[in-house]
Length: 399
Ligand code: 3PG
Image (tube, rainbow, N blue to C red; front, side, top):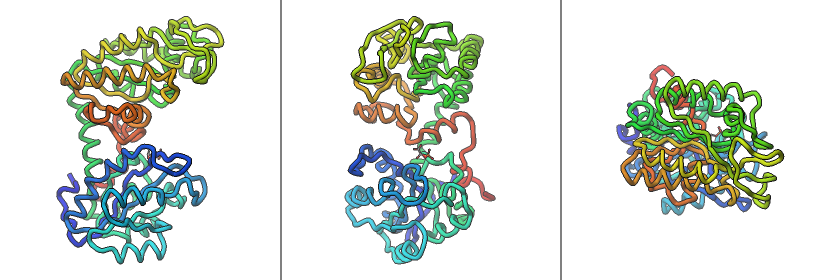
């Protein structure tokens, strides 16, 4: 495998794609720096070898051109503190300024480029744009697992300009290693916990997991599409009407395959989608008209915890309720606590991306589980068995 450990960066300028798509508050302060911290070992390795680093990333989904809230300049201070040096910044990721700053880089120095997505060419995978970026480095390092499912200029196309000098960073390698461990070598009982708002985002992964897991615990907004498919009355809960048949098929498939698929038996319900709404507990199959399920209920929480505590491998993707609202965060907290305890007892736990990773980080549990992925969509796509362009571009000679 082409990994960063097999490359000597002495005297080289490494052009490194990172996923610095981090959340910023209204004052442009970083609210979760997990992805920055994750990239540090790769950057450090290059500097320790005697190389210099040109960092490139996207931030958010800017619509047309530069926007202050999506500028990577907001990350310069954090990076400068981390490496105890002044991190240089290029106000455009291509063009004469970026070229000059990259050219003048000395070993030990770091240059951060402005948001790649300020150019539409990035997402289009434009080869000319990729070539211009490629001119900024001698070797290409891809450590952006979170973006590896995108065939963008900087994540995949660019690799063709570095036929020999292209490697994966530590994040990329660790992510693939942990995902493969769950996909290929899961110790039983294997429990997957799937949450989040929509079943449509998780269909393929659920189908795939039904061939592998012993238990599949359903939570979050998508529970109610399952409850409806199971003949329940869900009041005003979120439902994907066009996915009710599919949910019913998945319930049938689970039965055939001997998988214990659990839908929350009870729910925390509210009469409005608000933390100030009236709150009650209800059987998930008998939610009153106008009321909606916004979290798994206390019985479901206990049942899920028991299954989790008896598992040897745990994969968790998606919160159990509207975690951002304190009245509906208890289910997610309960599951997180059970995952932490199961891990302490020797289970392997992989927390997959996005909101469930944010919940684990917020609760201070990040180092009490086996691995917290930096990828949301990328991890799901990988687990669905799809090739990730960012990985293929490094692994294949002829990309
Ligand atoms: C993510 O946050 O999942 C990655 O940074 C990818 O972002 P994207 O979905 O905007 O491509």
